[in-house]
Image (cartoon, rainbow, N blue to C red; front, side, top):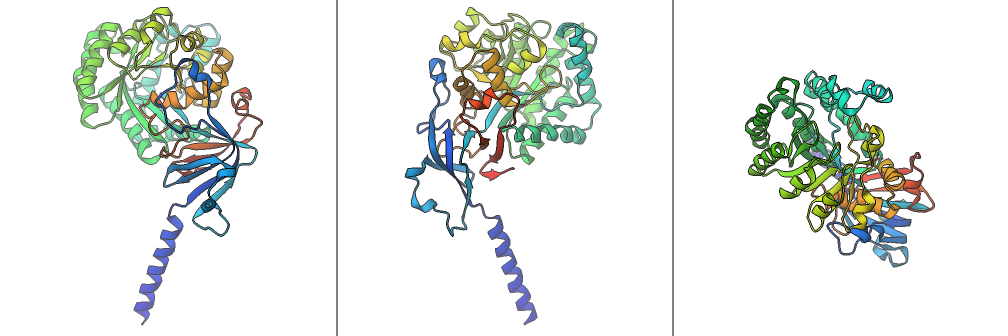
Length: 441
């Protein structure tokens, strides 16, 4: 009898456990403004359409099984969503608040060791990006620190930054390697990115960037390092399936167009689609080589003119601007206004890294885009959601409020309008984070 009683007690406890851990539908009601809604989802938004944002006032949003299930005006909310006595539906009252799709940050280097605040001081004293690199700073400085850091410590440091960007509204992120600059360290970085993907609620894309800089030991033999990237690093990365994309820093003082072509061709043979660091420091030809190899995105673009804009017209490559980087380094601002007026799409990303953009705050990126790049709030919203999702290959599942898309959203505090988000550039306006349908905070 005691055995039977114990058996039934165990079964009962298991049922209780399962009940407590069964996903409940989540209803957000009385939303002041549901922003970036789509009945027919788009892959990207271009040109003048970037100034348009679909939104619903006095709205509801229902999330179920990690996806967006239903939304509309409160007056049209189905009776089945009445939560009175319904223990299967959790409810949030968002009166006075706005709901946005989570930010998609399509260009970061957030897996790194240590920090580089001394270079910050060097910049204040007048040293240029190139001068800091010549004295052992910049990317090579981060490479030294990373090589001295264990994989576990690198993961722990990186998770601090991951949790930070989650709290700031980011729900999907692309993370690049590139601070290893040798086979073992590049693999270490990519394995850390894989661990982040497996343990974090973020959607994570990994990019192999072995061609981020030429290591000091190859300074007099650049071709040999390019050969190492092609013949050793790319096959090893592919063998462990550690990367979604391949990237090259095609710019003055880094990798030439010819070197970039060799690396991208090698990556394509292993199924790695191209992404490019281009035209940050000079008119490098990086935009054109990225287009030639069907790059998903070409990023930075501070030095871009009519030729680059013309080359991007009608292409599938997403121009991605990093206003945090140009703000922090004092570089010229990319010509966002000319790009949009020419009919191009534009994405925005943080470039979170220890040297030129030590911030993953995408709300601040929106503000910088509005203030410095003269983008409208609506254009900035499109650029950090739908278009940045496209730049990560995620626009079918992320970047907007649409049925069937992943339930990655955030709820603001009480604010007067959606334009208030980039306007109040120094205020923390995000109250609730929901990723994959689960409340994070």
